[in-house]
Length: 147
Image 1: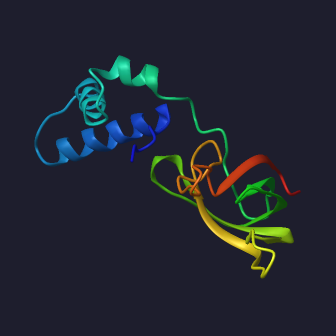
Image 2 (image 1 turned 120 degrees about the vertical axis):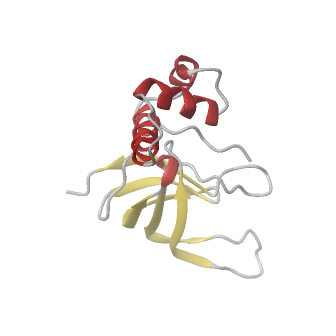
């Protein structure tokens, strides 16, 4: 599994923390050295290469009460963010509350309705977990202020 590359701001913050830790430990480290070290940790030849690969700040930032819409297991939904927690690499742990319950079973013989789900989405609003056909469990298309 590939780990998504953090935003440029997150990479710079990582270098800043590295520099502070090294200097605190008595090993002098310049900001430039810290940037180059972070680049190598992420598999890049140098900082310029990593900087070119990284994106600007993530597209979405989620907060409780925010209205969202998208797809859950292939079914359209609209609802709101019940809880949100920022995680490493710009991901968000979310609890989504749907306006209308979604039947997540494809069978005609029984149903399993979901009104609320927990998920972890990346900067694009997609879960890393996928269905058997490779589609993300959750894809958030639109996020707007709930105010």
